[in-house]
Length: 605
Ligand SMILES: [Zn+2]
Image (tube, rainbow, N blue to C red; front, top):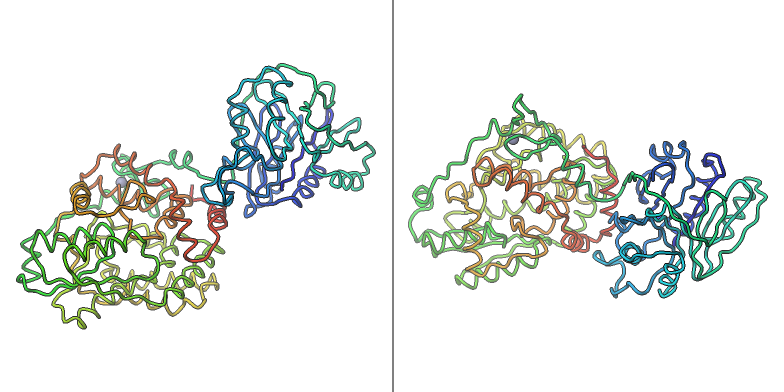
């Protein structure tokens, strides 16, 4: 359960050590989340979670406590229903009219069988939403309404319409300490007794009268039952939890593309144009003729990398149906993060064309363990340049392109890669390296100097965070080798074939391609179970994600207008909680803990 509290000093400032002691005592009842509301001439609300700095050590707390506060109230939360990282579920709950805390579980609002589900609703939120939407003319009516609710309800809430703070309990878990100078409320009598001892207080402690709605009368300095009417004020909400969409929207962006000022190594000229736009050259697709020259006649035996995502499924269709190459074998490197949807697409297309699919799978248990180890290592000392490391385990995909070519006696390997819009400079720019990309070529084509700088940068990060030296080390080293030095002779299909996403989408629909609803409208990246998490990380900490990079390239290719790109990127960047949760389950980490830790990392904006 949770601990709620209230504290007021008569004609005096709030005493910092008394308030801090109340919070520390209340934490015994739950320390998942903490929230506090200071009532001075405004309302100042601070929310924080278990991984943030302690709330009473934050700058905002120490500023607010110096002001002339009439009172403060708050809650230490033990999460029961509704995930911790959703700010709207963390207390104090803030609605248009109400700022509210609650201890207990209100049974009327619980529909989920499993309350810690990532999408479960929060009872307190629903309760205050209902109070907010109903119009109560007096205390008696509101009290009657609350009395109809089932389950334990102990609440302290502020009504912004009449500037009043209310108390209520239906089981008696709310106590008041009262003397001439102060009133303190708490969930346990024991906490108030401890306060009395520590600060030599001589007042009395009373249990709240149950099932009665009470009010704090500031003038008379008493807790009372009578009604009063009053005015409004402004509200300032400082949120250390949750999405930062509003702040991200405010970032300065390039006048042509949508890259923000937080993009690594970005520079704007006097017209607000970014250096990435200035050096960009549009992709020239080499065309079918050149591709067919390169592949050879229709009997050429082709090894095709099929991941089950959009790019590779369309590529297979194009080779088979449009260009008429029927002698194709596909291969898939299933390293434990391939999504169900991707697997079903592989199955569908191979059956449709009567084509063989070779699967290479490593020890998936180990691969997942490696990702877990590196993710947890990263969280200890997070740097955005190290994010690609989590997934370096998929790089042997490239190696199998060469290996299986020999073993299947194929003439040529083709991958559904090479579309320039998909290239992402920021992944190495975060490591301080400006590498100009073209035709979305693989890392092995970087200039040698940059390759060594990058390797050295990674090496430094390893020495700065020794947790990276875990059992994944050899696997990561193989990944580095595969990406940097393995000579990849496979043909990137989309250097030749024009990648037109609108046509591709409608064609794939006709062909029976399964899209992943969990992944949202943008089906790019649908084959990757992990990108929902990495994009969450990039977006929350860096203020932009892979999607902003992709959309910006689409603008530069004249596929989208800037306005369209902004609209689409806003949708793209909505967190895909279900995908993230599935991924976390796969690798064996607690979704909420990971999300909360990510949200506690210092932002680049
Ligand atoms: Zn730009």
